[in-house]
Length: 168
Image 1 (cartoon, one colour):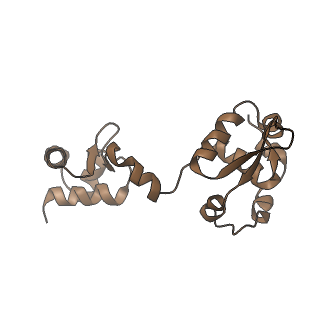
Image 2: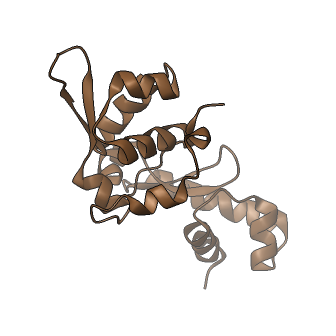
């Protein structure tokens, strides 16, 4: 088993940035030896036309090249910021909810949150009957992603009061 293969295993399994020191400790090797093998491994990845690369900005991490991000987005779960997740929670609990009412509860950043949620496919918006606002609804993707099967009672139990949902 080569040292480069062992380093590659560490990068693959950890799925986060790791330092030379951490890798050396995991593999019970000295840091200069790890650093030299890491540089060789980086060169190996950069010289072939594969979809993977080793990023060394904040430690070392094995990742998919940016050129393949569209495929990754289709296959991997979406990460939502806390603020966007709170906005989504309110929509799910009170749907259908008018976007203007949501803005009153969450503030002006709600527009950005809703745009992101629509783009990610978690929320759909339809014009309300007076045409001045949108009604917001969760989508089947929302239910599938959070494994709710159409039941938002679980969300209601997780939220004590609307105070927890207001932006700080």
